[in-house]
Image (cartoon, rainbow, N blue to C red; front, side):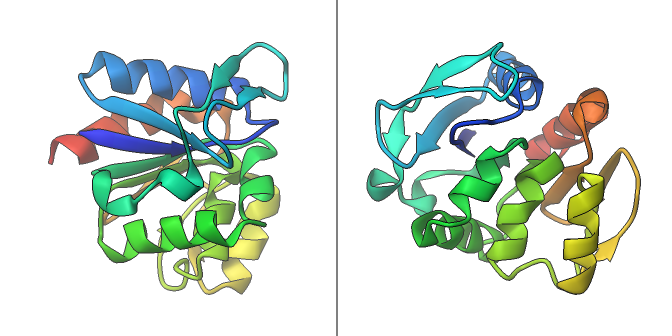
Length: 169
């Protein structure tokens, strides 16, 4: 599968790197999409750096089979850009697999597609999701149809396992 990964400065290092490596090891292509093509992005903790493969202007959700959104400060930056929000909305409306960990769910929230979905996220994001009408549970990983959500770095193994399971189905 060809997976879009929406990313900006301040991403949570392990929430990007660990799933990225495991998705690729499973044979999936992962395209890092940022606000601009060729931008060098650094993780919040300073352990990881990645250069974007594409900018959002050159990215079409129809070209991808799935979406991956790591947490950290990245999702909050990206949701200020309508093109990023529209990208997420289109992928969700097409019922393609969506994997969001920690603050990654903020993009689902901003896309207006959280209502009625069973989800989890970082503790402070959970309340926002509730206000948007999501059925929020505090579990390490939650699968609701095409959507896999998780809370924090310690949940990465369960998040990746459920994500890969969804991608295989």
